[in-house]
Amino acid sequence: MKFVVNFKTPDAIQYAINNLHQDKPSHISKADWDEAVLDRQAEAEAACKKWFEYDEYCRVEIDTDRGTATVLEA
Image: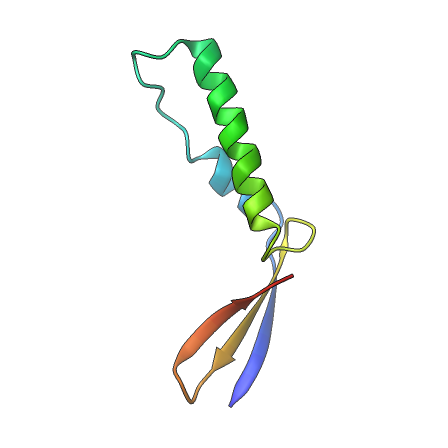
């Protein structure tokens, strides 16, 4: 049996992305670190658009026969 579960997860993506880069290495300046963090956050946000519509809606297809769960593209 297959069915689709819809999730609305406002702020979940942004929260996860913001928490990726908590600790600045000591050998990198704050300005360089801040710029690198913004670049990586933008990259992660762009990648998430494949699966999350409006940065908050996610659909997961459950297949009980196979025992799988698949995130569907937005």
